[in-house]
Length: 163
Image (cartoon, rainbow, N blue to C red; front, side):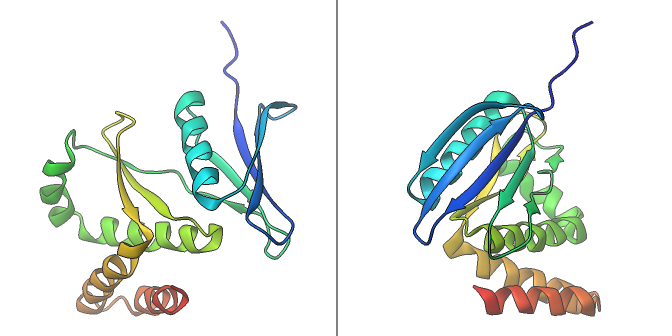
């Protein structure tokens, strides 16, 4: 039986500009490496490699902050994005918690778009562009206030302030 490779994607910010070195490793050596010159092209390359190599280990190296590792994108039991609303209504705590987690990751990595959920293991994703993050956080805030989850309210308010 062949051993499965564990692939990781490492992103290094280069200098003061918007250049990034994106490295795909198998844990021991660099498999592929590319330098890109924008956040958008960085994100496109990272997600392309994630899909191509079926990896979820994305590690951001930034000299201003400590090393950051993305969380795994949760798969939800829905096949079409249009059918997700019912799942979201029945799982609000999970959904709003994930929105807050994903936006936090997006802020830390200066992302332009987030992958929030995967549709039932299909490698199709529900995504959110940066201009929509505040609306999602405000909905999460309303939910967490209603549920009296004040630590999450505080976390969400800090995220809104950072946008």
